[in-house]
Each structure stands twice: as structure tokens, then as C-alpha cells.
Length: 348
Image 1 (cartoon, rainbow, N blue to C red):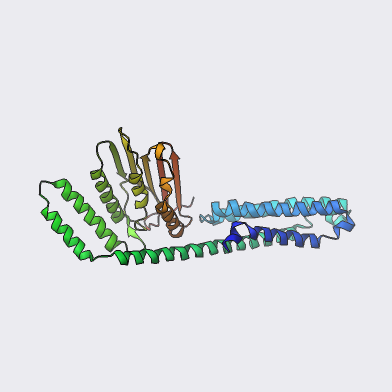
Image 2 (cartoon, helix red, strand yellow):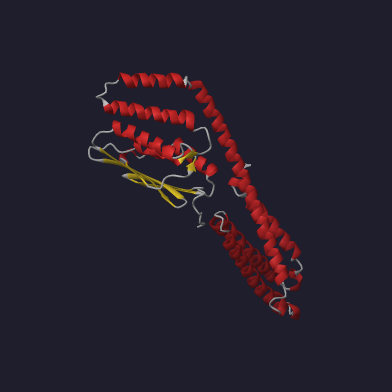
């Protein structure tokens, strides 16, 4: 079935059926007006249909319908239908009214109802096919995510040790560290909080942003402790990052990648992490310098591929992910449309 969608066989079959049926119904034109007008009618009618169908599927649906701007979508769709009817009416007047000398067909609006019903039917049918295709891909995505989740759970069970033993051991090590070694104590405490978050608080579908933010801060603090003076690490957060929830551990792969693939120049190597909120839009921006001599697609590993799939599943039509690459830098910008009852969500 994937090959069927991959090679657009659905489009090919659709247009073969559409054009074939139209040619069959208009075959008498060959005798009445000649083959050239029969071909003209076939081309004009189906070209106009293709124009409104693909304008709807490729522009109106993703830009307006998917983003919830239904009123504007309806208005633009009605305008698209009207454009088809007017253009086809004009062609009908020329072909049937003057070429075939039919006085009734010389009236501009004589075929309006017929042309409108044809356009409406094919638009509705194409949208139904499009929705069926999206449903199929969504089902396959969910199935793939379920398989990956089961595999991850199996791997986790294989590697799992008693969490109480882990935390008791961490506490023992913490108190064995000399009190004057505050950096070591802080790093161990951060690691303990990160582990606790992963084991006990990430079981739900969403987590308060405050807890996710605390986890990210602990991770950044641990990484800062590992880096020397050649690394400039900047972490900024907006003041209004509170009162909403996101999927747990969704942001950390982007931040991990920045530390994993940051450059190692003798001069300053830079990592910038920013988390902000603008009403119902939450944004993560990550920037890191990198060595162009080591550019081998390192940022495009399985981690980013998995988080892309999670975004498609958890935030369909509610996220924007932009990845920018240059020889000396790598940038990621992720925007999520958050569901916050205290915020009036504006459609854009």
C-alpha cells in the first residue's frame, strides 16, 4: 500500500477515471462540432477541475482548514467554485452557443447549476480521498509508534534495576562527598533529580512545563560541569513559562544534540538555548557551533527522527520545526501551539 501512495497511483487512477468518463459522455461532440472541439472541451474542463482540486488540496486545506480557520476556508472555497463556474460558463457559451449555434446556450448562466454541481462533486470526492490517505498514514504512524514503544519498554525491562537501590546508593555517595566539594554534590543532586523525573514523573501523556524545565536545567547544569572554559553555554527562559503542559522528554533530544555535536575549537565554542512563550505559542531555540570538517549528517540521527515522529503524532498541525545548517553552526527552532485554558487561542 505504501508503494501505491508513493508513486501517486491514487491521482493517476482518479484522473484516468475522471477524464475517461468525461470523454465518454462528450463523445457526440466529435460528430456535432469536430474532433478539435471535442479535444478542446476535454482539456478545458479537466484543466479547470485540476486547478481547483489541487488549489484546494495543496493550499486551502493545509493553510486554512488544518489550522482551524474554517470560516475563511469556506469563503475561499466558495470563491474557487465560483471561479470555476464562471470560466466554464464562458467556455460553454463559446462552444455550445456560438460554435454549435444553440440560442439557449448563448445565455451566460444557462449551465451554472450543472457546472457548479460538477465542481462541487469532484471537490468533495477529492477531499474524501485526501482524508482517507491522511487517515491511512496516521494509522501507520500510530502502529509504528506502538511497536517502538513496546520495543523500548522491553529494552527498559531488560536493563531495569531496583530504583530504590539506585537512589539509596546516590544518597550514600552524596553524603560521602566532602562538604567542601560543593560542585560534586550539586552535580550528583542534579543527576538524582533527572533520574527521579524519568522514572517516576514521565509516565503520563503530558507533564507540567515547570517540571520539564527543571529537568532541562539539571541536564544543562551537568553538561556545564563537564565543559571547560572554551565553551560558552547560555540558557535563557521566559518569565511566563508556567501554567501549561507538554509531552514529557520532547525537548531534551534537541538540547542533547547541541552538546553532543558542538565544535571543539581551541577558541570559544558556543551553545545557546532559549525557551520562550508568546500567548499560546511555546518556542524552543537551540544554537551550537560545529566544525565543518566533521559535517557528516551527525545531527540527523535516530534521535531527531524519533522526535519528528512524536511531534507528528502528538502535535499534528500544531507544531513547526525549522532546522538550519551552515558550515559553522547548527540551529533548531521548535514552536508548539499549547493548550492553556487561561489563554485565548487565536488562529493564524
